[in-house]
Every structure is written in structure tokens, then in C-alpha cells.
Length: 518
Image 1 (tube, rainbow, N blue to C red):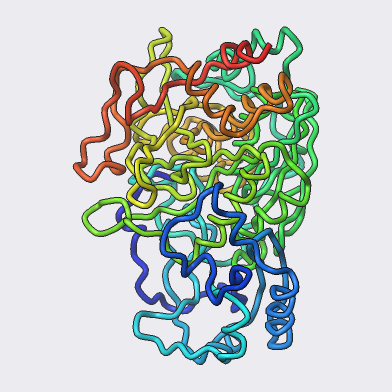
Image 2 (cartoon, helix red, strand yellow; image 1 turned 135 degrees about the horizontal axis):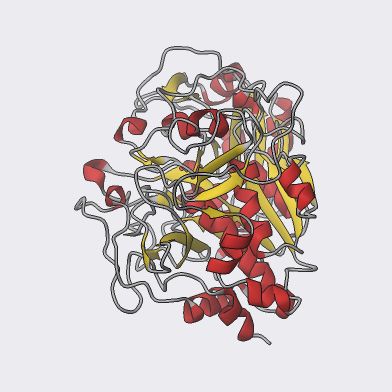
């Protein structure tokens, strides 16, 4: 995810642009025997209570059939929710409302630039017959990718909404090894494995073998020579609306996936692509991506994207938007099912779902040339106002420093967005297929790889125990401050002796964690 930028908060009506009219909506259903569901529940759900919200299948089928008769098309279904697509006119007719085009928060890091949404004061008169069948229907906003820090910019302005297919080097492939650069940085895979102390585990045969790790992201161009040279294999799945398994126009998913392989080279990698390079607004929502990932029975899910939940005065939002309740519910149901889920804590953002208590929230630590550790001032650290007592992050991966976090040399599609934009300040060329970046987008897949090592060592270990092991074995980080943009006081939460707000329990130690289970 890019760094926090106050200009990204603008959600005023935007001038009509090239984004299509298709709407992505989340459907939540009533609890059995009730006329209310997750969006109308008076408290936050948890993994302990989520089972009570699983709808009656027949009632949910009736609601979806009614919506289908009105033109809505089913794209995904989970334990507590469904995803559908519709046109602007179909949505406005069903709810007797009017939509306006809003600029999407996130600027150049947003999946696309704007969304149709009911403005404040818009009429809202849903059909009572349909309303009795379901809890609610909410348009899904574009998410933001967590490679850039809030406050920095890789581009000169907001991303345009039109096609953004990459422009690769003509007739050539990028090198399997990164270019030589005249500044301190880490290269995948060896440096990442070494600094997270995963190499000793690899030497004992603990490489994530037999563990299915799903990563939900922009795309995965694993035809890059780097992946072949290191013997990595993967399966790429298209979430609803995504196109072309071989292309990643943004580059985010391709680069960050190298972090999983660096820590768990033997894991079974399942990439769930969200983006549509031809028509960005047709790409998948995070909810659609999660529903697709769950079809493949993963043991671990890694997500380096999300939403910035920020209230006035630079404070964390005290409430979860109803549009995100379906995603919250599906995450809790997945954790209850025994799946370990890791989300980025954000890069100056008050990240959601990274602040959910039942996920592992990945923060950042910078390790310098001498091996000294300090909290990354690029990574978020904050106390959630939505989930009482929740401090973010839990533990940390390797993340660089402001302003650009140029720290990890990662393979990306030649000519992709990150390749072109990052060349202005990371020392690479604009179409060489390499970028030097990090953010908590990198930390999340690093932790996912470590979770795969733990699950190879003990396939029965629970998500709660996995988090406890990571915290118990992490290396204490006592200096540095987190990103000032994730602190209402503007200073950045400080690290200190023992567990602290800036780094949680500290930088993960893969071998120490695995040893707990051997």
C-alpha cells in the first residue's frame, strides 16, 4: 500500500470518467428466526459469535433469486454473504435512489479512481418484500494496495480510470536477478530468509511443503524469469471480473508474492487475481477475492490491501462502515474454520481488515547493514477504536523507511505501474522488471510464509496458537517510531522494551517459531 496522503481522503462527487457503470455489491442475510443480520447487530461480531449469523440457506436462496430477477448477477458466495454485480439503473430502480460518482480514497494506490454511490441525503426506499428477505445490500468501494506509504507518491497525480495494461520491454524478458544498486537494500530470496531467520528451518526441510497459501492481490505474472530460476510453482486463479492470469498491470501482487516464496519456498501457492487491466472497475472486490480464495481450501491467506478507516482530526474511525460488514463476517468465519489470515497493518493508514482482532496484523521493522533493528517509520501502529483493546500490529516483517521504503529488491512485470513509477527514485529502470519497495504489503506475505512453516511442522496448530507462537518468539525491537500518519498526535508510536505499540511483539524469528513445534 502506498503511504498515507491526506489528499486521498477526498470523496466528493467526481467528474464522470472512463470507469464503467457496473456495480459490485455485498449482500448480507438475516439471522435464522430474525429480521436483522450482521449490519444491524448492535455490537461487533467475533469468531465466537459469528456462527449465530449463518443464514438459513433456503431464505438466502430466496433473496438471491429475487435479486437475480431484478437483474443482479451472482459472482460469489460465502458462509454469511454473497457478492453480486448490477448496473447503475438496476440499483437505482431497486432502492429508489440516485447515485453520484465519488472519488475513491487512495489516490494512485486505489484499485480504480471512482465509484458510484448514494450521496448524503439521497432517497432510499427499498422494496419491502425484498427487504424482508435479507439484511442489506452495500456497494463495495475500491480497495488500496499497501506498497506505498501514505504521504508519499509514486505518480504525479491520481491514476486515470482507463485501461492500464503494462508496457513490457519489446522482445525481451527481465533478468532473473536484480540490478546492482548503489545503496543498502535486501534482495529476495536469500536476504529476506536470512533476516527473518528462516534459513535454518529450510536446512531442516521445513519449507512449507504441503501447506496451501492463498494470496489475494492485483495479479501474479509468475512467468518472470526470477520465479522459474528459483524453481517456484504456483496456481493463479481469476476472481470475478479479473482477466488474464499471466498479466499483472500494477505489479503489486507479483512483487509481494516473492516474499512468501522467500520464507516458504515449498508452499503450495494459490494466487487470486483481483485486477482487470482493460476495465479497472470490473475487477474483483476484496470480498469477491476472499470468497474465491475460500473455494480452494487454503490453510493460510495473505492479503496486502484494504481500506483506510480515518475519522476527522486524523483519528481512527470509531465505527466500521456497513459496506465492510460482509467482509468482516467472512473473515471471522474463515478464522473460525481454522484458516490463518494475515493482513497488512497499513503504511500510515488505519487499516481494515488489518485491525481485526482475529487476523494477524503485519507491521514493519527496518534492519540496517549492521543488523540493528528499529521500528519502521513507514509502517502503521495504532489502537483500534472499532475493536476495544486492539493494538496494531501483532508482529512485524521487514519494511523500509520513509519516504519511499526502498528496501526489498523484488521481481515485477516489465513496464508495469510499479516498474514505471518506482524508477524515479529506486535506481532501477522504468521497464527492467525490478522494483525496490516494501511497506507492510511485504510484511504480510513474509508472515504468511512463516505461518506455512509452522503448519508444516504441525498441521493441527490453530490460528490462535499460530499468532501466540509468533508473538512469543519475536525479537524485541526497542528503538524507532512507527508512521506519524497513523498517530492522532502526529509523532508516530514509539518502540520500547518489551511488547509495544510500534512493533507489537517485534520482528518475527522463523526458526525460533518453528522450534516451538518440533
